[in-house]
Length: 429
Image (spheres, rainbow, N blue to C red):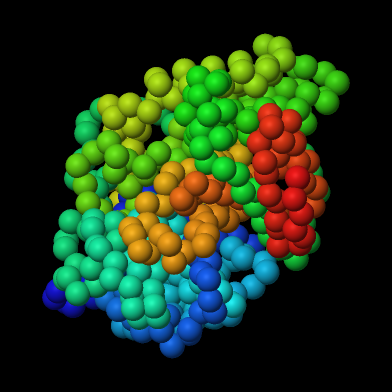
């Protein structure tokens, strides 16, 4: 590949908001971890990282301020590896990470990667992480791992299709407003010193699928509905129904499944299914029905294209384009607050099956996907399935654990075996 192509790179349409929205206490991060059956060899990991980042050069970037927009500047090498911590996904200080926008950590028998959302989304990040793990296991264990469009071959040259801004190529003239009413916010005490609680529930994927089918929904719809139900229980304690607000969950949608693209950069949007408790009490079955109906209507290629096309139209607006970055930043900060977290009560992201190729699948004990906390919504959830193991992660910067307690107790009451662990305790229920 011609290195001159990567002296700099425009931020994709979804990436532009995050450098403006970040603040001293928050960076939009997500995290992948993989656990192995023996201790990590840092020398092998370093070689694997150096090979992988050359295959994903659009991740070897730093943020720069231009006159009108932020832009990416390519950097040689890779970030220094770090020992992992018990408090993951806290704010990333780029200057302390050699200006790289992702960090690689390891400890004992696992490795972790935390990525700033401007670089890519969960789908693109998972491809990078799986490729890194494949390279590591090839070196460490001598495995012969087949490569595909997801686990990339590091001997191949990067292709321009892999780092295109698919939002710009696939946008249309049809647009759709993103304005919605404000949603109920989880009531709890904010944690001090930016401590991030991670609570993980491990369940048999096949049994979760059977439970979801009994409610007539997919696994993603079932978990979304159960999260709405768990938050709804908290709001139901309010004495006056007129104080109730909609309980809505932001559910990211991987657009790669709907449109022809090979991009590994950001290419996702979101939908916000939910209920309005002002209309009365909702059972879990009723919430499942509401979520399924909403998803059937909204997860539609034409509607989603119109939704992201609206963002592209704003980006192309001549007045905004000519507005200096110093003035754009407060405008984008305000837009993020109005159109972002305030419209939902929480976020749930399901990356589905990890789909690790054999023999890589047998060498990985667990693989996890964890969302960092949002700027205003201090409790979010995510999950990833490996083999027959579905692992749901709750991330919060709140002291009380009421919502995830409601959530997991409901699963236990349904007869599902749930193993719980956290960065504070481990127990089985």
